[in-house]
Image (cartoon, rainbow, N blue to C red; front, side, top):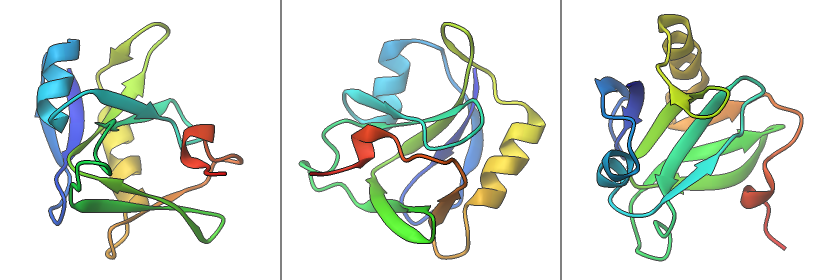
Length: 120
């Protein structure tokens, strides 16, 4: 499966990985968490315990010009299919990389931030 991988302090890169839970977990270094902060069929996979483990900051998630969350550790961008993840297209990769600015902020334009990113 073609995905976009981003390590902390590095540019995103296109890689191919198996579309299996174990391969996704290996990439992010533990149990996975999916967030969907886009208004397009993309998801971001990160380490579910990344903050608790003290993983390095990767991307600031900006929504409506405000910091909504900080994604830590290695993250993967995937395309969401009907029932599974599917290959990112070249257009998807171009779109996602344009959404990451030079300050390592992911600027999303969806109308809602996913509940997993909202803290009470």
